[in-house]
Structure formats: structure tokens, C-alpha cells
Length: 217
Ligand code: FES
Image 1: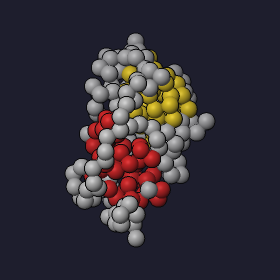
Image 2 (image 1 turned 90 degrees about the vertical axis):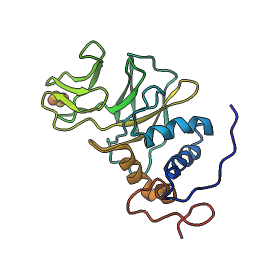
Image 3 (image 1 turned 180 degrees about the vertical axis):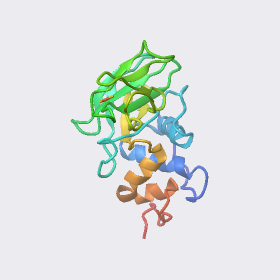
Image 4 (image 1 turned 30 degrees about the horizontal axis):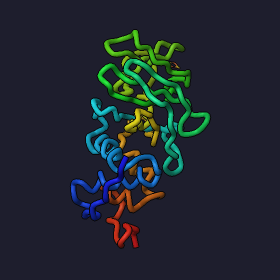
């Protein structure tokens, strides 16, 4: 794949600034080419709902309490519709699950039930498009949103942000706390590690980036 030239940096207030800022984040992780970044960026700016593209939802962390931004991690070479994969992210003790819904949407979540921490499982045969199910006390979570739909869990599942590469591989790139949005989570985690990128994302409380490379002065 070829890498196209980067356009000049935009003003932080420009509508496209957040997209470019996230491209920088992904580029820094050496994950993808610029063409690939565009799919990832579209996910965040579009509210993590670009199901047809296959980029999806959710961030998390212990599930949600990581110090700084977690390292990207490849979790699958490919994830076909109707299937799921269990993995650990961002730490080796952090159970997580990724599912591919029938319409192509990818979604990633903490697999630790918000009730009493039992393991949450993917059940393709339940509900209209599958469910995330906790067998301990019949807890059920919406596979598309992570929201509680039945049982005693008090909060939605924290999310794991997933992206799909051009070769079909699926990567975890970040996490959210329960009920936290993707941009909010990125801003929280990028605020200290990459204030220049956070500023370009339009994160509240972060001053505009200045200087040739975007560092604050
Ligand atoms: Fe999951 Fe109780 S631990 S429903």
C-alpha cells in the first residue's frame, strides 16, 4: 500500500482537525497507512457507528482506568459476521470480547460483568442480533451498545475501541469507562500523553496546539 502525502496542519478549530489529530495518533503507533487511518478517523468523528466500514465501537479499561493511552494490540487476523473472539486488553488480566454483528459492525467490550465480575459471553443465538450474556445471574447486555438489557448489572459494559485494517485484521486501540464516549475517553487518555493531539481533537480543557509540530509552549 502506498502512503500519500500529508496535507498541512489545520487550525485546531477546523472541523477536520479532529480527524487529522487521530491520524497522528494512529500514525505514531505505526499501525496503518494514511488510507487506513481515514476509516479509523471516520469512526470517531462519526460517533463510532460506521458499521458498513467495519470500524467499531467501544473503548474500556480496567476497564477504563489506564494511565495514559494503551498500546494498540492485534486481536484477530479476521473476524467474520456472527463470530466473536475473547482477548485480553489493555493488560494481560483485562478480559475483553470483540463481536462482529451480522451487518458488519464491530464492537468491543470488557468481558467483566459490571454486577459481580463474572465472565461475559457472546451468544449469537439470543436476541435479534445476538447478546452479551452473563450466566452468573442472567445479566444481558446489548451487543451493539453495551447497555444493560436484563438482569442485575448496574452499568453498561466498558468498551474496547476496535479498528479493522485493510487486510481484515482487527486491532484494539483504546478503552472507555462504563458509559463513557469514545472521544471523551480519548481526550482523557491523550490529555497527558499527547496534549498536542488532544488539542486538535478539540478536547475540553486542552489549550490549542502551537509550534511547528503542534507542541504546546
Ligand atoms: Fe453478571 Fe451477576 S455477575 S449478572
